[in-house]
Amino acid sequence: MMNGRSGQEGKGQGPGGGPDRPPSGPPSGRQQERAGVEQGAGEPAGLAAELWRQNQDLAAACLDHPFVQGIARGDLPRSKFIWYVGQDATYLESFARAYALAIAKAPDRETMATFHRLLEGVLQELRLHHGYAARWGAGLHPEPSLATRAYTGFLLDVAWSRGVGAIAAAMTPCMRLYAFLGRSLLDRVAPGNPYREWVETYGSPDFAALAAQLEGVLNRWHGEAGGPAGVAPLYRTAMELERAFFDAAWHAG
Ligand SMILES: Cc1ncc(CO)c(N)n1
Picture (tube, rainbow, N blue to C red):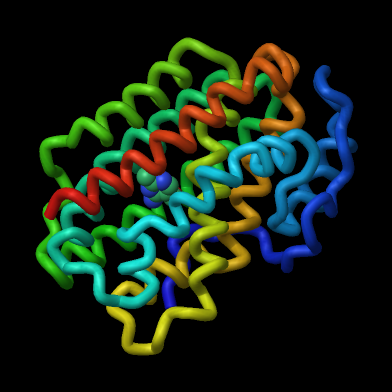
């Protein structure tokens, strides 16, 4: 098995395991350290948990999506998966650039280091895509589809024009949704399933821990992004773009 992203170890401790943080204002370095450890457990906490709850309809729609169910059963047409991998590689390059912009904008070194780890994780995930490319002949530099352009355009717009709280809100659904999908499917993928590596990558505790680190940034810095009401539309939009991404892959290839 290959973990697409490395993160801090730690098993899930159940929803709401972490502390609720005050809605805004930069915390002390000590508080941040504590938050890092507790949220490293891999479950959303605080505002991030609330936003995840508010988007359960879209999370369920993605889990039930024929593309994702095809991955779970292993009978998704290979051509659709190859199309998806190419689009996803394009998407992840923009995703990595958005993290790089967040590093540049980070108000403190803790936040900078967190985004740096997340960026390294994406670069590692892209190696997984290169593996698919080598094995199945997927092209990793396709013309971006409308769904891909919508999602990367949204992310890069937020990353260029907003601060780290808004950037974390726009980027968290990508991480948390895939952690959820991977974990939900982990028990169901047969050993011979050709997409098993995909499920194991996103279902790993390492990936959930990375998602929780990004959620920690969201919880800490949403105050500068208009508070809960300011970040909720960004989170929701990203969830909608995730579903549109699966729709596009299902109808293509
Ligand atoms: C579209 C999309 N969302 C989330 C992830 C997880 O990193 C991914 N690889 N692609």
